[in-house]
Length: 257
Image (tube, rainbow, N blue to C red; front, side):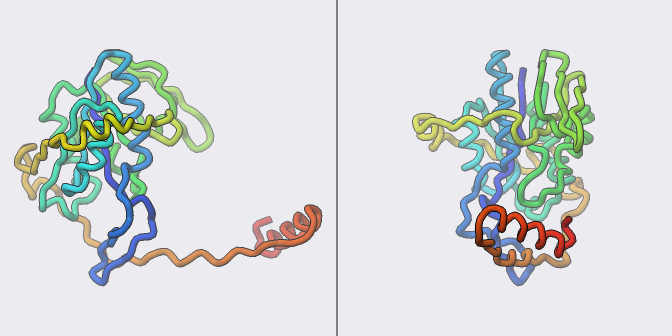
């Protein structure tokens, strides 16, 4: 089995600054692997270990994204590829999915693609479904548990709003992971040091057979403002009975109850 995991590097915190030209300034904030992508990596690794398979991680971004790719390698992935091109600076989720789909086709012999259900920076949730569309593969979104994965089929539980849905699909397939699909492993210091100087192959648009005209346009931001600060909280004093009574009263006054 050859599994590909799509990884996005995001700011560890959402307390970013907005520049005068409406760009996001995340300077000084530690970059990390997108939360949901870590579950995708772990799931791919577990099934690859069971089937003596291979895991390749792909990221689209700047050269800084190699840090996240190296962490994935330290977790146990076999190969990593960075897609980096100046033309992709303002690409949207649809365009990114098209580029990554082309990269997956270039790799060839891929049986399954894992990615997070959404990224914690833009949170559109569009990438996984768009990737499946450009690959022409079925998609299994919001996957909470993988029951079975063979050379030809997969059985999963999908975590919907009010129920779990068990679905079977043929391979190849695109799977998007939700939180608690598994428990992502921590790479050892030995493995981190081992991959720290490992070169990461970098592909541009031309390397995956695409040009700027194939991207379908870029995202144009008309305005962007940070969320308002949260109001300060209020401590309710007294014994438990008094606190509960006061809390209920305030909830009623706020029309929450």
